Amino acid sequence: MTGPQARLLGDGRRLHLQHGPIDLVIEVFATPGEVRRAYGQARDRFATVLEELVRELPRLRQEVPADGWTPAGRVAARMVDAVRPHRQGFVTPMAAVAGAVADEIKEALVAGRRISRAYVNNSGDIALHLEPGESLRLGIVDNVERPAIEGAAEIHADFGIGGVATSGWRGRSHSLGIADAVTVLADSAAAADVAATLVANAVNVDHPAVSRVPASSLDPDTDLGERLVTAAVGELDPAAVGGALEAGRARAADMVARGLVLGAVLKLGGEVRVAGAAPPKLLSGGGASAP
Image (cartoon, rainbow, N blue to C red):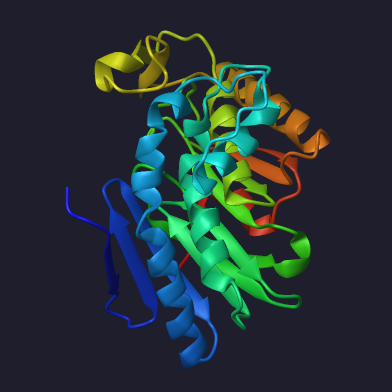
C-alpha cells in the first residue's frame, strides 16, 4: 500500500487526501494564505492517521467494554466516545471510524486559522466548521449506492450541526437493515456516523423480498461476524415499508431525546420519516454530500 497522498483537485480549491481506505475531500473558505496554511496542517495530521488506527484495530473491532478503556490514538478515542452512549445494543467503535477521521482532520485544519467555513468529507460522512452567521450548502443524495446530487440544503451555524452522516444497505458498509438512506445531523461527524449506522440497522422488517447473508461471507475481517446483513431488497408492500421506517424513526427519536443527535431523515421505497430537526430540503432526499 502506498503512503498518504495529497493533491489539489482540478478546481484548485479543494484538497484531496487519500491513504488506503481513507478518502477525504476538504474545502476551506478563507484568504489564500489561510487556506494554504490550513491545508498544510491537514496534510501533516493526516500523515499518521491510518497507521495509528491500524495499531489498535483488533480492539476497535470489538464491542466497547463497560470499563473506562481509552485508546492511545486520538481518532480511536473519538470513535470510542461516540459509540459508548449506544452500548445498550451491539456496536463497535468501527461504526464511527469515518466520522471520527473527518472530525480529527477538521480540528487540525482550523486550529489557529481564521476560517469562516470549512468541511471535511470522508466519502459522505462530513465534519463541518461554521463561524457564527455562516452557512454551507450540502448536496442531497437520494441513493447512497449512486451518489448523484439531487438537490441542496442550507446548513446554518446556529443549527449547531458539526457533522452529517448517511448510511443504508447499499452503502460502502454492511447494514443489518433495509433503509435506502438514513441521514443524521449531530454536533460531530463521529456522533452522526454511529447514529446513522444504528438507525439504518433499525429500519428493518422480516419479508420474503429481503435477502440476507452472514457479514463474514462478504468480508472475513468484518466486526459484524456472523450477523446477517442485507444483500438485496426486492419489492415491498406499503405495510412493510411503513413498519420498517417506523422502527427506525423510533430509534432515531430516542437518540434525539437523549441528546445524542439533532435530527434524522429516513428513506425507504420512496417514503420518508423524520425524527428531531432537519433542514426542510433534506426531506426530499436521502443523504447529504458536501459540494
